[in-house]
Image (cartoon, rainbow, N blue to C red; front, side, top):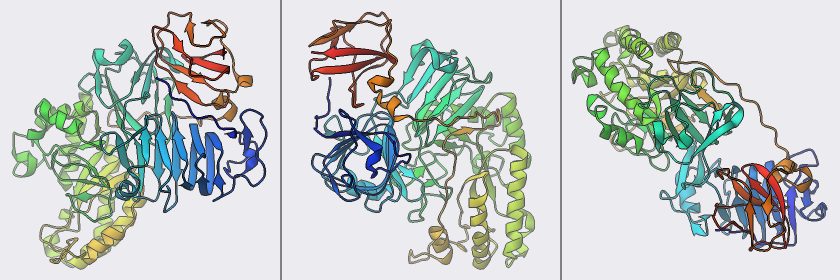
Amino acid sequence: MFMGLISYSQQYQWTGASGNNDFFNELNWKHTATSEIPLENTINPGQIIEFELFITCEVIADDEINLGENGKINVINGQLNGHSVSGLGQVILGDSSYFNLNGSYPIGGGVTVIFESNTSWVRLNNIEPTTAYYYYHDSFYHDNQTLSYPENLRIDNYYHNGSVIRPNIVSKPLLKIFSDFNLNGEFGNISNSDLFIDESIPAYLNNDISSFILKRGHMVTFAENNDGTGNSKVFIASEEDIIVEELSNYLNNKISFIRVLPWNWVSKKGTAGDIQYMNNDWFYKWSNNGSSDLDREYAPMAWGKGAADDENDIEIIVDKYKSTHLLAFNEPDDCNGQSGQYGNMCVVDTSLTYYKNLLKSGLRMVSPACRQGAVFDWLNEFNSKAIEQNIRIDVIAVHWYDWASNPENSPNANPQDVFNRFVNYLESVHEMFGLPIWITEFNANRHRNEWVHRQFLQLALPFLEETNYIERYSFFPPTTQVANFFDSNDSFTQIGELYNEFMSTKSITETRYVSSSNLDSENYNFEQIECNPDDEFLSINSLELDEEIIIYPNPSSDYININTEEEIWKLQIIKMNGEKIDLSPSGNGIDISFLSKGIYILNFNNRIIKFVKN
């Protein structure tokens, strides 16, 4: 049940005493037993380190860390931002611990990374997922076992050329919910991506949630009704935890639907269709039958009625790996074509009935994508009725082909004029709905020549990247083949080369994001959380011991017991160097026989008690 770290004679913990975050500054470290500072030039870039180092808060290593055979780095409730790590040692990532590397060769072949929690990651900022898998797939461990993708290892996108690697295991809570404000009262933990509705919400907290903590790297969808409708909201903890101490009246004590998902970090540029080699990290294909791969997130689409009319359709969408958003119907406004021609989907009330089913997926919702002009009438009516019925839309999808400019008679149109109309259209859509926009199909019109398309695209791409309300886009080559990505020899055309080489930026830039919707635009102000290494390590001098909780016998050599009838939701032994050992509650008391003699801390439900092992 317990697995501790080997004890080394030279163990140092991070203090940040020099006033900077420099890993290689010896003044920022102290010996765990004597509090002495390491000798000068014993922690240098590239120099072999045989120490065991304990890191918390934020530490920066701008050069290579070389770990000897006995070298270890333990990250405890913190993050290490570095260049690379080499050698034969170990990096051990505990709860809420993050290891971010910028180097082109970030992890040496002899280094082992041990995940002790599902709330930790390794982020390789300049290594795409396929390359990360090829070189490092056998470097990651949990419980003395190699992790395997995709069974128990996730490799997600980190924008256009990075990756996030983390264990795909059920371990620590990804979401903690509380019945009272300020993270008080009854509480429940959610540690996976299942749907939780009504009585399945942990700790009987159905309609009784007032505050919560969401771990970084995850999103959560809350809704008032058990089908995902009613007052609802999506929170995205992209790169920092989200701590909401007081839910507003909009959601407070109204949550009967919860889904937590791993976040996937994508750039704006995508493809309409499963098109390879376009240097993008998301795509869709007008259906729900696609799959994400290592380098790209698949955004499923419920193309029409047939993909939204029974529970099996929802199960298909819920099971999608790496998918965080759901695209609704394709041009349902067209009674004579696309999805609108089937099952009376061009009738707004009919489409809304089936769209409502899609909210059961717990994904962030993208509106139906209408023909160009229908956004201002058909989709406007759809949105108004959705608001009346408390049906959430998070993002507006649009198609644009410049049909209003008589393109049949202007094959050589001025690209600047085409671009100006494109910008005016998007600004009008945003002004009407006030939500982020995905442009899922667009080009300069199939009647225009290749030169017009290329010049238009050279103007459009920078605008789309620079405009905050544009969240994602995908150029759709005209069906006439006039502006394809590839020629007959499968080589890039000029347009294909332009789209491929254009470097895209973050689709959502915020480290913590509260998604507005057609139902609610209320935001939350998040305070920056200060980190104190002494507090994180829980050194004995900084502890506030709880004298009301008694453990016995104390001292003890084998087992200790707690005099409490409380439900145990957190149980840890903490060594004086900050190392934490998670325990599983047992009716036979707490086994401490494996510990060496000395003073220890027991963290019981975040209440601190000191005990002695003899």
